[in-house]
Length: 550
Image 1 (cartoon, rainbow, N blue to C red):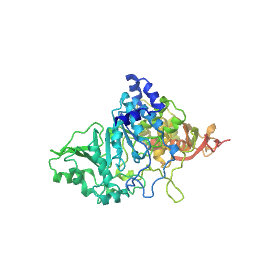
Image 2: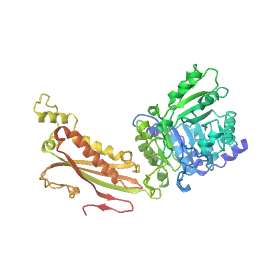
Image 3: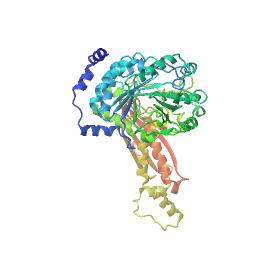
Image 4: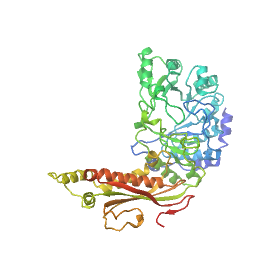
């Protein structure tokens, strides 16, 4: 085995030699880079899950549609050197734990080299290299992977019944998985866990049998709630809440004790006195652990994904292949992390989330997102505008100096309404902020919009009187002949990407005008009217430039 280890060490490519010869980062630079892995809710992300492939040698119904999924061409997937470069950047920024996933990671060619190369990152602070596998083709290869640096293994095994195994996975191989489990328990791995996706009336009757596996072996059995993904026909009725499973276990094992959780651990763990192992629950649906989430995901095609249940993705692969520096990559990573939400959607909503595999309206009438993978990133800019018509009382409110103190003793209904509107704050400032936030949230609001890393958002709101001339940028977007006051909202959005930003500009204008309506409804709720929202200018992309007023 030592000869095999030596052989793999001597085959490390030039990329690894470059990283090995670079000096270790100073504490100050690590702290600076770690800022890119801290989101707006102060969660620090030190755990990176890297998908090595989209392929799998099983067809578990809860994971993959029966018709399969469209795989990315090999040229679209990250190369070994690209994986290593990104992993190095993450580790130098504070990641201490890496887990290899898929698809099924063992079907990736060169996985032994990948693990060996990642093992070289321990000099920069990496503490563990884990892998999640179905174990189907692993038992003979496991010793080599451990020699190369693998420290933790999670095996997916949803049933102890060979017949049910074939029913769930649509493949044979139950005995092979058990062989891998046996080999793992006899190895020097620091941790061996068994992941069990529990589905009502299919395998929930086996929960106690799985718990018994931890009696004589140091296994951690983790029961995972059935989770929704596109195409897996998720039904809340098929999900068994972890609280219900715990009650079943406690009927037989009343002495089960709550084990202390590790920081950021996804599983709530329990032990039974006298048992060598333990069991736990990953309750993503009924009791989420979003507040302590420290995980980031790198997909096989190089997209950073900050939440498993959020379809938003940002391409690091494209940045890499455009020659981006480490600092530029960190900026992109930081933008993605800063957009991570406080928590994912609840059970009632998450099953309709557009999540991998991505979908859109195709020739069969199904939803399908436009494929932009073959496009080259270019600078894209779009300007949109719209107008909200308001009565004079509202116009006077937004154009007058903001009072230091409101009229507390106002009795006139009009004065009371004005005071109420002013308590909300400055209308135009709040609407401008809302418009900017709306542009950034476009892919979350419009299901089939591609998530983009926006580089600039400019929003202006201009009050206009009937006698004023139309704003130059909106000559075709005004109606001053009818004698109404109005507020013109204009938004210009810019990015470096593969698709245009017209939707982001339109969303900004729409949200900005809706916010004006909300701010002024106390004085003008019945009289206001929103209209003439349109794209006035765009540049970049295959379709060429466009200017509505030329």
